[in-house]
Length: 171
Image (cartoon, rainbow, N blue to C red; front, side, top):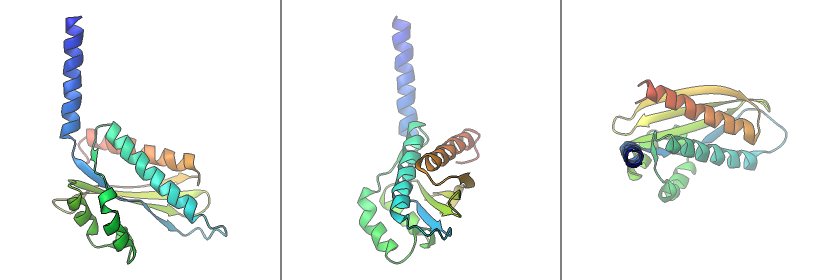
């Protein structure tokens, strides 16, 4: 019994150590580029889904111990100020400034490309704040414009990133 408690305690401490060692990541709100020309306005539905996949990815990366997720709530005023002029994906380095303000070592930007009602793709980039250089870039396509399809895409990304980090390809 003592061995079990000691082994469990050691595993717990290793888990805590890994969580403490995980770098901080700021995940900016995902953006959409809709070229589908659908006759129905689905902006509010898409805004909800963009927040949903951002939160899903944050939870999945945190759960896997890959990153500690930085809280971007304190940055909302600055983000809205930037968005009044341009997209975050076109802001010439504002993502680095935001990540520094959040105390993050890495920053993630994501864009959902809606090509048609059934075809979409996601572009995701993670940059190292200190160097302003990408450490991970991925584009992947998926089918469906539903909560389920978007959630599957977010989970696919999290699994893919975890695999690449385990192989030392995304540091």
